[in-house]
Length: 421
Image 1 (cartoon, rainbow, N blue to C red):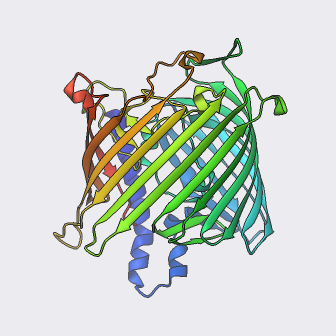
Image 2 (cartoon, rainbow, N blue to C red):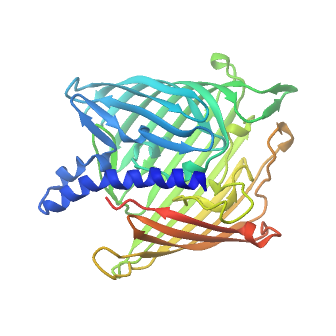
């Protein structure tokens, strides 16, 4: 309950902070699209002179750091037109540790919005996440699932990358990185007879995102989507290189994602997210895949009551499954919003999610107990969103092969948050 109150207060802070820009936009119904894009809660940046403050770093919460306060951002054209310098610093009040990033960017082609970036990062990262580089350029003021994450590792990373738009509908990024990984969990990885607690990873990653029917714009501060058309196709490949800069492992990781959105004339909509991830070689658990679980490892439904994610499995427990081959399917069908008044228009969303995967050589991973998704995982449920100030309720039920013996262990009951600005 204490964690819930902390999370609720953080979310309420987002709502209160977001109301002022929304009110200003409503006052001028003839405001141009260009003016709307300057709303900091659309771009994620609040300009102060020649420096744009990145709103994502101001306040966060997770189970390892507790409340995390920070400040970060990047310079804008008022300082230099073709160069940017930025970073962030943050402090966790539970782990009593500072995290930071520092770097800069240089624009080499204005027409294709091509930038070269060099950054150093000293921070933590969730175990088992596979992030598409091009997704990081799509701003979101808040990702609810992050408040529930429990398993992290530390990393110190140098990375150089080049970002470009060959076409207005195509985002691309190429990155070279080197990381020193330290464990927070009691995890070891065995490879070629050697046991690793910490290790070095040298990686080359290429990522592309194609959005053939989307209305969007790319500003100097970031990528802003105004209409999620159909489809969005993302592809990424990462190659781990042993021996480069002291890197310990050779491996290859592939990711392919299709995000399909259908909007109907009756104001209902359906979104389909299909994703496949595949890894071969000597990959430690920290850099394999999970299906984005979002159920805290607590005993009762009320103890697990927290905030539901946007694209996460609500009944899957943190650390329950890891895979080196994973496929997931998520379908959301939103009914036309119910109209009770101008200020009360709730939305019913019917949801079903499924996952299947596998892992070779599970014996290489020690210290963290987990299962593999070699059978079909299923959950279904619904959300009743936007009941008050963007808050709603979520219910999901786990069934099929991974149905648990105790009934309440298969049930997820949480609140949702969808910002209204």
